[in-house]
Image 1 (cartoon, rainbow, N blue to C red):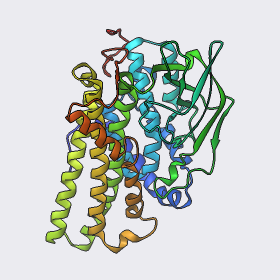
Image 2 (tube, one colour):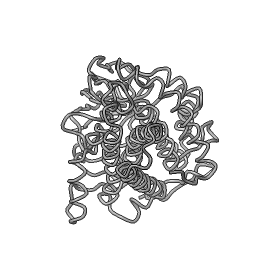
Image 3 (cartoon, one colour):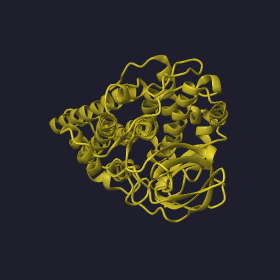
Length: 414
């Protein structure tokens, strides 16, 4: 169904749609060969899409999270692997842009300008087996003069094929206030970082090439540490940044994969002349309900993140529950849509490499992508019943600058 959007959002969504049309033609080959779509990233750089969440005054397209979720859904309709990979970059850049508007940090401004021209690509390496919720990590940091030395092993390094800078985490156990989780960003060519090629062998999202990453005695300067919080806590600053941006945008990406399959299904059904079949009409309506429901929740949550209400008017856990719910609805509705599409299309959906074949494999990754369905159930149910899942650590600032602020502004701090 078509929706009304303001001109600024229409421009960004139209750009994503044009790129998706090109990426759709390449998706089958990259999926079958499990190769990274470098030419897609060249197109993203050339078009300016890598600067979607960079402020216009720093050379970007000026979008915020509410714009990003709309554009990313359209991009994913063409190639889910490309959309998920660039999502890591756009999310981190958007977080940095909001921090720059809040603090006026000139070092951040320089990196944002480079992100806008495509010379900086950000990605994360935080996931580890047993540490999916980012309240802890198996990586360890030891203190040295003016920094730390970090060692550990990371999984699901989405974006490692193109990233120039990597965000990661480690525990500094000897902190005088008790063990602290350090969040840091360093250049990917820092000695000791090893991308372990060949570790990504999956049935879905094959073209992301999300290889494992080893950190071996990596030196992290003090100035590279952007955040620290007590081990095991629900951190409010992570709600404002990592979780606040990742959860709704992940939901949008996986929903977009389903939308791409659904749109092709509608075209195929029309060619067959099946529009008047009762089962087709009922199932298509169900798909519309699932898609529009997910879109509405993702959009509302993105607006809440940009409006600060998730941490000013509720607890950190309540805010976390809301952003996680948006991702859960987006990904599970995506699976439900694709399952219905397959019922409608029939045996052509079994053709290896078809949009239907890719979609049914790719969307299922969304239910496992942190927060997974099981972890989301634990968090949401505990929040409903008023049970704490972990101690809370408040955000460093109550209010972050709005995306349409034309120059950096101060903020109230705790």
